[in-house]
Length: 278
Image (cartoon, rainbow, N blue to C red; front, side, top):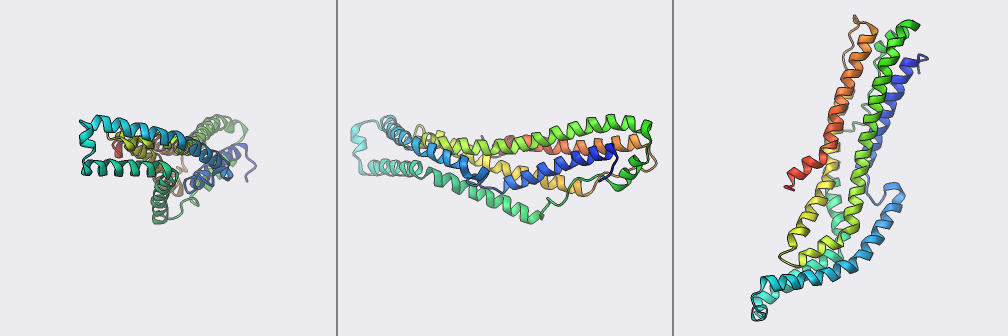
């Protein structure tokens, strides 16, 4: 690594950014059962199991409410075709509540398959890292003390912005994991609404919302793949410009690309929810 403070500052900042992208890559391909050693998942499974009893009680309640609202009289309930229909609805709803955890893991695995297909089709992009061009390093190292003063200001501002964007990225991906845990923990309650015809839309919206949260990973993966292509082709450095202008132009273009990436990641939930019709 260079002994120049300006170069070191820029390289350390880009190193932080690359580390966060590598962590995002790992998180997007990781199961919630393995996240942080699986300790959080064990707690979520215990909560899910405890709420199953409440979900089964609510299932009976929603079923009775549905029968009252959809049947004009008791004689209608006694009709074989109507009784069979009600029995099938109750059996399906009970199965959904009982095996809700397996259902949600199956949805997550399907989405992970989509993410894996995108990853394999595009190739591994984690090796395409943002790096300071050699000609810029040489130009900065040739600057004297007084010429380096404006460079310090430029690099400090750029480094601060890039570091903040890196942490926004990683927090967004962590937030996706938290939402998956929350959906999984409370699943028995909204899934119990499938027992009644008037309330089944609540359960459908819950499943669609959970699938949308899982699909956010695919949008984030696509955004990172696109950014990786920018990272593998660094901005063109104008050798005839002053060093300050050269560094400012480089940081400006790099930050602009990073802002697009972070903006896309932040809007991933909105994009997927619109796609799911939520």
